[in-house]
Amino acid sequence: MNRYWSGRIRNAVPYTPGEQPRDRTFIKLNTNECPYPPSPKVTEAIRAAAGDGLRLYPDPECLDLRAAIAQREGLDLRQVFCGNGSDEILAFAFQAFFEPDREVVFPKITYSFYPVYTGFFGLRCREVPMNPDFSDPIDLLCGNNGGVVLANPNAPTGLAVGLDTVEKLLNANPDVVVLVDEAYIDFGGDSAVGLIGRYPNLLVVQTASKSRALAGLRVGWAMGDPGLIDGLRCVRDSINSYTVDRLAQAGAAAALRDEDYFQSIRRRVMDTRRWTEHALRERGFAVLPSQANFVFARHPHHGGKELLDGLRERGVLARWWSTPEIADWLRISIGTDGDMAALMAALDGILLYSESS
Ligand SMILES: *Cc1c(COP(=O)(O)O)cnc(C)c1O
Image 1: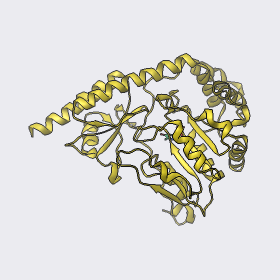
Image 2: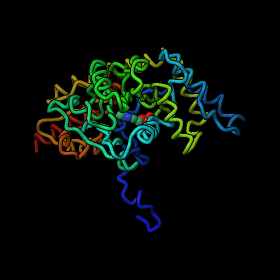
Image 3: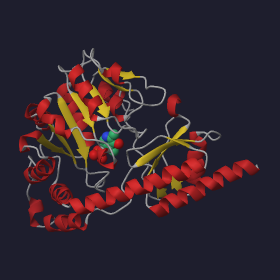
């Protein structure tokens, strides 16, 4: 706090990003990054873009990148918007489509950036309690709200809903925007992109950070009715027209055009996830059936914080929240097979140590 701060930032409750350690090498299973490198074509494209062209501003409309997305998804260019990570697009969408006098609704256990945005942008939110099995409380997201935000698959649970459920939300909330955050859609869920032509209130947001191994490049995109895309553009051009730089546009477009590489890394992550769920259950963990690149797990005799600290001592980072409903749980990103074997060895150390003491 500082005497020059505006009232707005005095009252802000910012998001806490997952740790990016600098001092020591950890097995990093805390921020859902991809354990594999990006496509070699990405590096090539960035190298080619890293010359004289950097004198010039990037294309504010990201035309080539949007063309790559539109082509892959069978959409029109006017239905696609690109941003500096999907977090930026979410921030734009909250400002473009939600009003202070009507509550934005989302499930209680979900991406913790959503309540940060409503707070910071002077909006109100209603966080709807989860069903006891952590499934989304869909009926409570239907009607009587000023907008709906749904992460599908959800974070940190990893659970996904089907398209019938997304359509139910769209039909029940025709006068407000239903924002579907598909950051993890490539790891098993069904994308709502195919519904876009039929629902002018649907905005689907995806990212290159997870399934395309480009968290460091900061590229996300939104897909929806051209009217919604224009709304995002209006917010962007009121703040900063050039949010996606030249290297990011070139690299992300190359990633989107390398379908074979994309398929191979997402399959590897899903295979390793299957092995990880099994190995955790063998050790007594309850594991939610994940459709994402992480698992959400709980041990009957060890709290989430205890496991988090024990793993850290053994060189493995995971993610834990003190929120009472999930304080017993740990979110563990899917790494390489070697990373997950090291995770199991560390867990065995913790479980064994506590048994003998
Ligand atoms: C990781 C994540 C994002 C943010 O992705 P970026 O494109 O890296 O900003 C958005 N939503 C959810 C649910 C996420 O887990």
